[in-house]
Image 1: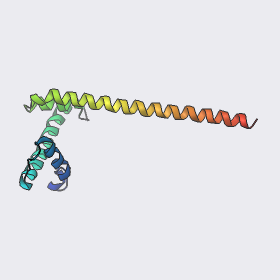
Image 2: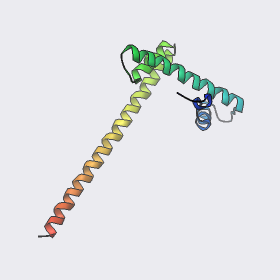
Image 3: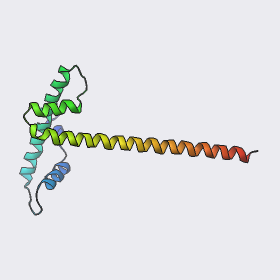
Image 4: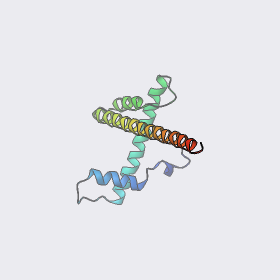
Length: 126
């Protein structure tokens, strides 16, 4: 757990970037409003995490899963965000799988190239 309350705050740069993406061009936000949004975001994350943890514990899980978070969103009456969040989670999983597959393919290609080089080196020694 955090030692100080300030440790629970989100980085200002991240909060500012999210706010800018949410607002139309030309709209600015005051420092006090940005601070309030950052603190509210931190509180929301803590609340959602606590709710998801309760769901995970009821299922005898030690790890909070995406499904636990989705259920927690519904439980805390943020139902309208469940479908977009689920789509986002599926896109994330798909992207991670594609990256993993690409890495495996690259590693396999590298190993094949090394075997060919070793075979070629063996022929040169004959």
